[in-house]
Length: 186
Image (cartoon, rainbow, N blue to C red; front, side, top):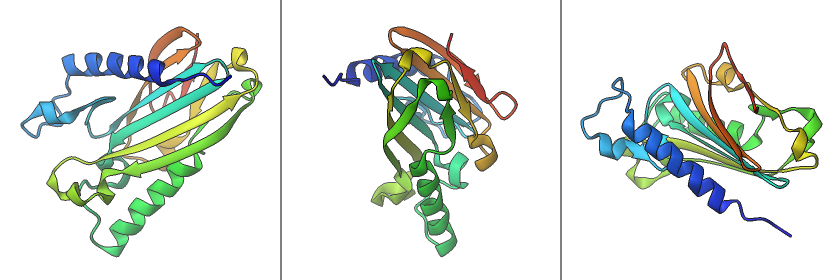
């Protein structure tokens, strides 16, 4: 029997929206902050949001960041170098090697998808974000207790990730950075 994770993802997305809507970051001021807020958080350079939901043995991870933090710009890629940078970032995120879970949980990647607004026609109209979504199956989900993030060495402009998680009914939040890149689920 397959469980649907959509209700959990919607709940945690709503929690993130409420959290970020009340505490917008002043360092990224382009005038209209209402445009900056997305379902998963605020568009803030140097920061990202990672949502992890585990229900039964199925896990969903959703990553979102300003494109500036991932590839260094927020306009449609024009030069060959910019196009290569976007393609390389999509490839890195599609491989899902920038995070790992403790081996005891025996989680395997079932699906990965990475995308960016930079490949859309409207990419020159303002903010652009980068997204990655993953589905994993965990053979021993009760043993899941940590997430290691190696993204900070791959993407130096990314300074902090707000991590929100729901694991079989328990929820929590934490911040990850280069100096503190392991999240413990307790």
